[in-house]
Image (cartoon, rainbow, N blue to C red; front, side, top):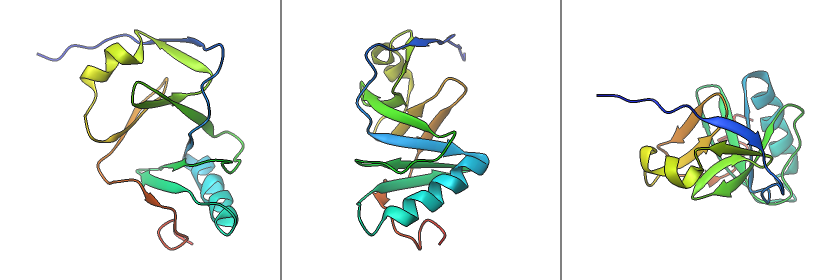
Amino acid sequence: MTQSVEVVWRRREPPLPVAGVVAGGSVAELLREATIARLAEREYRAVSGEGWLVVLGEELPWADGAIYLGWDSGVLVPTTAEPTPPVALLRGALPDGQLVVLLPEQVLVSDAPVRPADPALLGA
């Protein structure tokens, strides 16, 4: 039997420290371009899936419309948003050993390990 849990989001104060950034659709392309442009000066780790891109690191690239992420109980969530029930309780329903990004509208899960960002792998 499958059960669903309603997750309600509220503003998080103070925001989490930034650890990553995620973008989907056309914003993912902007984030990809911005990431490639900064690879000469920064090291990032990245993973992409069906229409989305997640970049992890410090001093992250900017893409208008991207969502900046922070760690909460081993899950990446928007830095300025906090879910109820808390991530620590939701974590048990999420896959272990994978990168999980919990967003207000979706959950992104990466089967692949997050790899060092490389222009060739990012589609340059």
